[in-house]
Image (cartoon, rainbow, N blue to C red):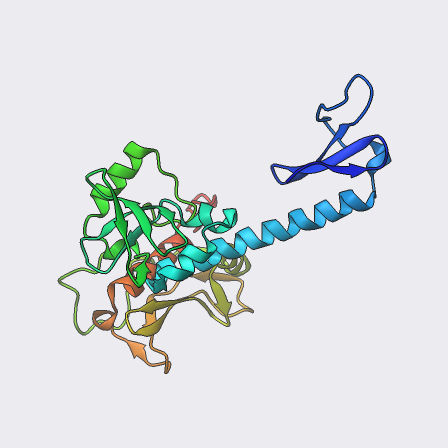
Length: 286
């Protein structure tokens, strides 16, 4: 965005998300000022830019949230849609360098570009830039990536930093020897909390608190599954985290053996994140 006139002596612009000013005359003409002059406080152009900066911030957050939903759910996204939003810097900064999969399982790589003709350019594990033209593209949850460790190592070599937590998302693989009769998982049960602190922790981590449970909904294959951890009744004072369980869309409790890999991983991730904030025997937060 260019510089806009603000009165007779100054110009203003958005610089790194903040309103900046520069003088148009005198010895400092053309140089960006360290702070906004008093004469510009409340100026219409300054207020307009501030509102625009707030909108850009909300837009960027919405892009991150949407792409995170696509990734966690491993939903197929129309390639045409990716190409259409790519010119938008907010979308592009979130999508760029995510691992994507095309029509075939071996069409895996880091997304680097999307053209208006619907062509994707990705860097594969051989370091080659390949062109893909699938009808839809998937941003897979990391637990579904068979080459996860190789992708992590290659990302480190390339200096890739993902805006959406994909490659370095904490994952849990479902044990092969899981008890078929088990009804929940108690690995992260028993963490001691003040109930209000536990509810606040769950909310700050992005989980929903409903009554006595912290929950997260995950699309796992063809169905939506809700993972839930008991955190005590709202009127309780001191509580201990309960076991982790999963519910199907009808509210029926699923046996852990029935839970798919993504719902298992995301449920364990939530339970572990809540448990990590427990009080120690000395009374300090872990």
